[in-house]
Amino acid sequence: MDSQLQPSGAPGPDRVYLSVVAPCFNEERNLPSLLERLTRVCRSVAGSDYEIVLVNDGSRDGTWTAIRAAAAEDRHIVGANLSRNHGHQLALTAGLTLCRGDRVLIIDADLQDPPELLGEMLQLMERQQADVVYGQRSDRQGESKFKTVTAALFYRIFRRLVDIDIPMDTGDFRLMSRRALNVLNAMPEHHRFVRGMVTWIGFRQVPIRYRRDARHAGTTGYSIRKMVRLALDGITGFSVRPLRLASWLGIGFGVLGMAGLVYTFIAWIIDQTVQGWASLMTVVLLMGSVQLLVIGVLGEYLGRLYLESKRRPLFIIEDVVTGSHSADAEPGSGHTDDPAPPPHPGRSADNA
Ligand code: UDP
Ligand code: MG
Image (tube, rainbow, N blue to C red; front, top):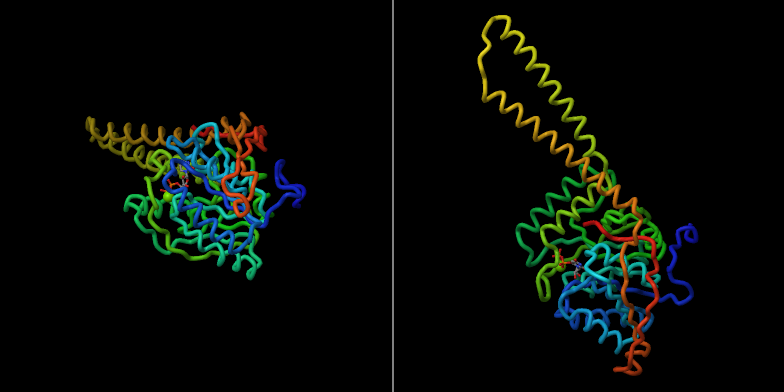
């Protein structure tokens, strides 16, 4: 199965024991601490057999400059620069396609997920023979009430609508095996809800509880618009039940309509018809809004179908940099720019 699902660009003989993938959007101020903490923990678990893949997702600050500088100094660091902001899920996907590890840790660049948990995650993966060890937040520090309440609401609705059993309080912070990653990378959809897709893959997946810290520096890159889009991608990507909403509403209003008809008929027979403007308006407005809602749901699916049908590449990598010398051996040495095309030309991104 592995060979069948091996996506193009997947690692060949130059594999490493461990990859860490972090999408970065305006994370300039978090990079030094992130790299310091990641490097320390990677060295302790993997010696020098690791890589840290940082994907710059069209940041407007000095993130890319900082990544280039870091990659120039340390051959364990791979930097990829996307051509523009593609959004968290696609930036992550770009990193996952580039990375060469037998195991891959997905982590946010803002240090909300503690890198130090990696040792324990690796042990758990080994001990439980798991393909995925996912972080489950027991506590969320420094996040707004709005964010936690909407997230809780979303996951409750999501679990009702969707057939896969997505774990609660779980983001993208997780350790994955190469075989699980190969399956994920072979899934071609544009509107990606990575945590759902990983759950969908199956294999053995085990949780690890952790406390989610507050952001180290900077502000969230997830605007309300991006949150809504992620929520819609999640639901529409895994369920067609909202499409059935139309049928259910149709049946419901059909029954109400029949009752109304009977009432009208009786009222007409006993000559009690009154000129009811208010009731008429209520029915018209109600029917109008239900129809718009249903058309909106149809539109969400139709739009996604249209965008998927274009088969554009998922993301565009403008530049990849890797340090050519070891940090342990020669700090400060140069980097090479690799103008190689993205490993997945042929698929892409526009979920605008
Ligand atoms: N991110 C990204 N592109 C975006 C928005 C966010 O690559 O358009 C990255 C960001 O740098 C971080 C991760 O995705 O590493 C999670 O984003 P953020 O911390 O802003 O979201 P929150 O934790 O507030 O949900
Ligand atoms: Mg964050």
